[in-house]
Image (tube, rainbow, N blue to C red; front, side, top):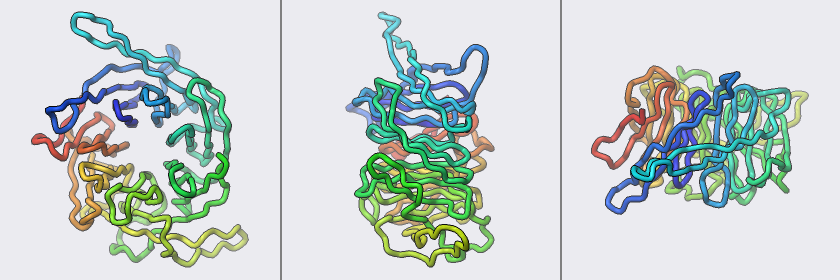
Length: 360
């Protein structure tokens, strides 16, 4: 998994954190990237895999992360640096770890997202917890709701006029949006985001049943830079963009004996690689013109790109090494795209002559 801040990129692989620093340069189009070091989060008596990680607000220092593990643990990790070689100015990397409250029932965390002083944690069985924390302490106030579905991804947005949390699940309503009021998650969604079944061309696409990737929309998009633009990656291979301000809705599905749900909101834009039927595992928005959507697919380390100013002209590339694996996590940053497969992190640079390279 990947986490990015203004000053560094962190790669979580197995039980290790790999840190890469961005170096300011007045002569280069893109700042250089320097490997800072690797830290193991495994204890001597057990190995454990990282399931997600996110930077949290630490006053601009960019050294504090929340890290979740497959054994159900969640930790706050503070990266520290010390110059160990005064001749070569080499840097050693160390950490301070604090245990945070695990999710209910020993469930492991599938997704973490953070903004300002809040952190959203989503477990694999659908527990969603919103924590309001102070980085210097482990205590926090919490709000928990149950989605009652196999859950994959979350997106926290506090900048919207109605702060919200979006959840991607495998269910009859794969993408729902819940409001946040007074730091509390609403248990009922205020928006259900629809797929326009049967209206997006191919009838031989796999049946849509899950959302695996979520991101805020591109800042330079036809809908503006509103935080109410949500981009989602679906099991059927489509990337769908939603404007939560839109009034374009479908008739709600019948809910006999169940609480009624809001009328589903239709997507403002749907894009897909017409040559690929692979599920979309991860999405990110931005790029050199702040107008791109990038999507990591489920096989063959393929990444697809679309410019929302001309969405019909997308293209796809293989990551270096041509791994058979999914692209598990993606981040668009300035003119570069970072991604990870089962074997390596890699970079796609929109402006470099050598546009794609591995970070082995």
